[in-house]
Every structure is written in C-alpha cells, then in structure tokens.
Image (cartoon, rainbow, N blue to C red; front, side, top):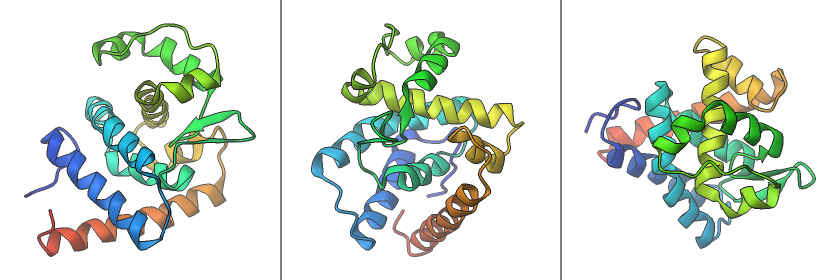
Length: 184
C-alpha cells in the first residue's frame, strides 16, 4: 500500500496511524488505558478528516498527541487544558467560532462551550477543535510545520519545537521501517 497522508483512503490512514501509536505505546511502556485507546480510535477518523480538508499530514497530529500527553486523555496545565492535545478553553472557543460551519459539516453540534469539564466530556469535539487549532496555525504560517508546532502552545519555544521534531523523526523512521517490512 502506498500511504499518502493527504486525500487518501481514510480507513487505511487511520489504521496506519493507530498502529504506529500502538507500537510506540508498547515500545515505551506508556501505560495507556483501554479507555484512552478507545478514545484515540473514536477520535482519529475525525482528525484525519480535518487534516485532509487543510492538506495537513496527520502524522504531525499523532506525534503532537504523543508529545503533549503520551496518548492519555488528561487534564494538564494545572487543570486549564484537557485531552490528548491539551486544549485550553479560550482556544476552543476561538476555534469553534472561527470554524463553526466546518464543525457542523463534520456532524458536530456547535453549542457554546462553557467549561473545561465540558471539553473533557466531549472527546470527539475536543479533538476536532484541537486539530483545527493546529491547522489554523499551519495556515497562519503559510504551511510551515515548524512554525505551527511552535505556535501550537501559544509560544514560539525553540526547545519545545526541537523536542517535538526529535520525536517526529523517530515516529517517521518507525513508519518507514514498518512500510519496508510490509506491516502496512
């Protein structure tokens, strides 16, 4: 199979990405719960859809999930962020307002988000909003993955970016190795 991260067979992309996640979770003993794996499986088809719309490589989102939460649906930033991608309430509100039509086209309700707890209880919507936040930064930086990663947390943090791309290179090598071995 040829794996094209953009505008390809969604089911194959989701399977490939989840297989890479499963491999890395096992390899690094990340102790991810069954609940978190189920949430990853339920939310990643939406991530792939949003990435296809914006011509973004979803492998970057997979690595961002690993970088932000090690594939765990958690509260972070002293309870101010939630999810695999550590979405903040103000960011969620901004993205929801900016992309309300697209969110509705994806079949998600656009009721106003009122709390971080609400984001915690709506994982698909939260993942879509988080993915849209990355895509927004990707477009804002004229398609620069480096700058979009730097801006994802609201800072242009060189250490964060270098750490992310160190991890990304490992994941990409895993992907290429699996492909050579015929795993995908």
